[in-house]
Image (cartoon, rainbow, N blue to C red; front, side, top):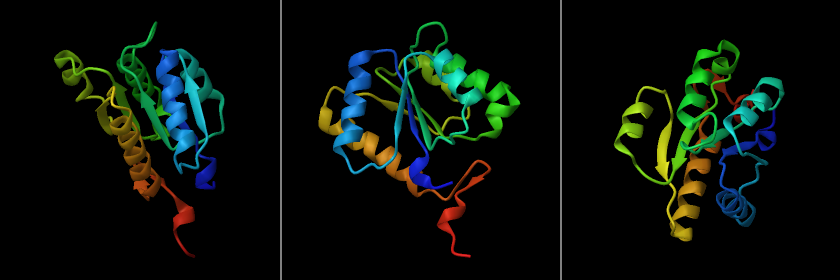
Length: 149
């Protein structure tokens, strides 16, 4: 699979936050498609039926119906979803101590804060995506197109 076809996933119920995230992706040199979901359930439906292999998941913690924490627990508990080994980062507005404690055991690749400073926010998003786009091995996934045969 060509890496450029690997979508970046953003799960966020706030429309303004989705628009800002989308604008940051469009204005940067990031050359990956973006797929946004308002709820964890909508994302699960997509993930269970798609042939896409997402590059990375950004997920808010505070989501309606199925929180980001509950979404992550469900992904880890369902064998087919867990086998996908998609890097998963929480991207939320505030470090609530109970959330930080809960996140520790969820095998996530990071917990980042959304800031109101657009330059810092943009820098953080680009840094996270750049890291995962350059990483050759994570979980059981090897990006074969990185190797010369």
